[in-house]
Length: 367
Ligand SMILES: [Zn+2]
Ligand SMILES: [Zn+2]
Image (cartoon, rainbow, N blue to C red; front, side):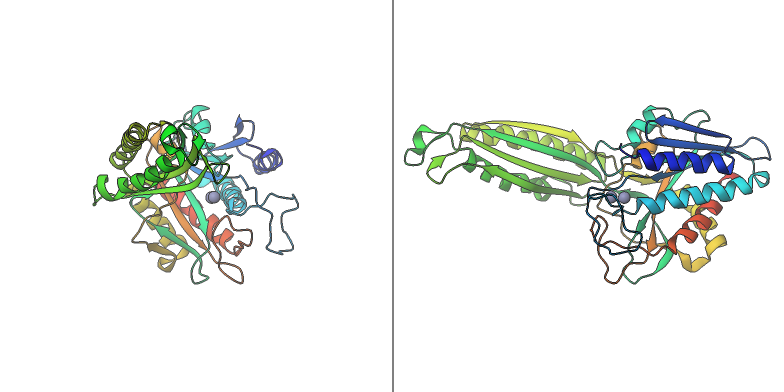
């Protein structure tokens, strides 16, 4: 939510190109609205996230971030640029289509609770009502390929929740464990038991991930600790798996607490919903991409992503069909993952994203 300069540039670019309306539903969120010259019709939206990450850039590029400790390590500068490009193309083509296109520039994708929920709450899916929404994300490709759109139907990114677990026991001297309630031992059992949720409680035909990322407790080798802390993240595609994991975390914490004489407090933070790709919208995207970029730039992938995206909320909170896909963005000398300080993309990806997505939006409005 700190994209002050970025959102000002977006606003000024949208105004220059002749949008019908430029709105700021959030302090750093911007929406452009463009009505086609051929009359009324459906309204299609495309969303770009615009935020950077608290990473010190190490790419050595001549256009490296000039803000110390802040880098576009998730490629959202490319998403912003591509959506501005799509907006400019469609402004110039406005006489050729009916209906409305909404360009949604969303802050804070990478920092929970995310900007999407706030944008929806601020009304970006209404006035005019959005009938369908698209989004894309750049991805450093395995083989250096640039511009290929990776499509998938159904659940595409996972829902995510965070856990902070406090184990409250009773401290004591290391030589007299019977007078204490050891929070470290309870936490040890807790870690092992929480791992069983995925293996013993989640339907094997469904899927979930449970990762404990931090644990801490204790202050000296001969003191029994009365306090321990564990923090974890869980991810899943379905509501059923999510419900199972959330219930089991409570049940296990209650049980281990009782068994070890500790009070275990669980704080759950709801993260992002799972992104569901509407099959009909993916078909439209395929037709548009094939027509504009050629069949070789359109690929169906066989597995979804285990990561999470708050693009999901535009559909989840409003019932609007949506589709989100990854565009191959090449890579630098060595391929590194998103969020890495050395993450480099090929800028060639911009023209594929602009041309491909402009055509996808037009294809949607024409059908
Ligand atoms: Zn990211
Ligand atoms: Zn991202």
